[in-house]
Image (cartoon, rainbow, N blue to C red; front, side, top):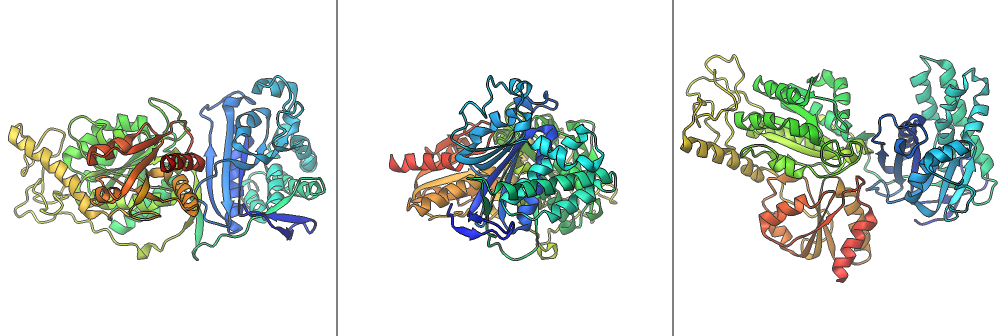
Length: 625
């Protein structure tokens, strides 16, 4: 980061240090309002004109004991005056509300970084809950950081003393006190947050709204006072140069919901979304229920199997069926997905991957469902697999999945993950009228109708709505005749139908864009090939390495199966191919099997995203070796 002294326009005193970008991390108990605090700082940074990426880091425990390490919730944001690709390898500033938050997050802060702690929560009982034998604020163990102990709890109580709130309710305002302080540190505008507080709490309880605004202002005023202390500075982060237009912050859940609503408009066909709640996929349903005016119907089913079957029934009835879940729920949907393959109906399946088998780590991120997407059903059940690379890309891939599903009468699985689902970034809102229409045609003419007679180009069968005169036909899981759709146990017919289903999915490769190089040359010493949420850290790592003069390129896949037709030839142009994944090498296995080449993998299964430094180190070791 380049640093230059500039006049502080906010406080009117002292100098601010200019930073190209900064990473701030908030951490505390789940009840401390960490995600809300991070969300408001995100909005303030977006309004300040910064590019940004966030990382909400939720605890897996629903009700962990207060003050324990199991219940720590964190939120990290990387914002700057340049293009931001990741939430940051490490924080420049940490706000820790209790000892447990400090213990679990201090190793995520750069040495020399600013660490603000609520010293009012560092009593003997608090320390014991967090597993500290001695107070880390007093034993010298934090000498590598710029630690600023502030009794945030006491100062919050003083700030809201005239609110009439009891102590418990008053202490709940401490997240806004801390937010006010961080607003001063980075020169954020408090007004939008104050307005948001009034809108959220003012109608129900004016006292709570006023107390939170008072706490916000008190924290900001404290920052102005703290400026007089040595080594406590304000910072200024310039605006980023972004394309002009109307922006909003968007998460992966927002992106899918808006994309499906747009798909309903682009196809002029109703979208029926059926799902069962599961972390981290539930936000899609939460957002879609607000968009029913745009041709979307939502249904929360009693279980995962029912959700998939409702979506399939909707497609049979002439709507676009969509279902969503995470890995365990996708496993339960497996037989129903096979039914959609066999019946050859359009179905969009959104899999927001989580870490680990079985329940695993529900709130952590991983990319370990690629095998499941490709092969995780009984019988030969080919389907199309896509993967967005960012929260904003979820909008685009929801539309692309709908296009392919309806054109080819085939299920399409979209692989998101916990990081994409919950992270946010600025999104340039598109003009929906400028997006390409998606033609959807339903069979009307009964003359010569054969339910499984296929389009010679796409191999898709006709889509016929039930009740259309003369178009009565059977669907189901038992094998059907390749034209009439009648039940058939003929061996040659089953071979023919199996071949048709495979050829139909393979043919999608002719209808997707050729694979391009995201950055770098199309031939060279090493290509880093990624998919999904590894996009950000790979992009930043390759950008940094190329700035150093290293011969490295970045290729990122969004169409996973079938693979783009030119991918093999593109990869042949590189001496080495490195595939970073948050699994044990699933895309690597697919690429090796498809192209019979000894590509190398870089695996990570910690439940945390790749760091830029990890990818940089892996590339350097291979180029130098």
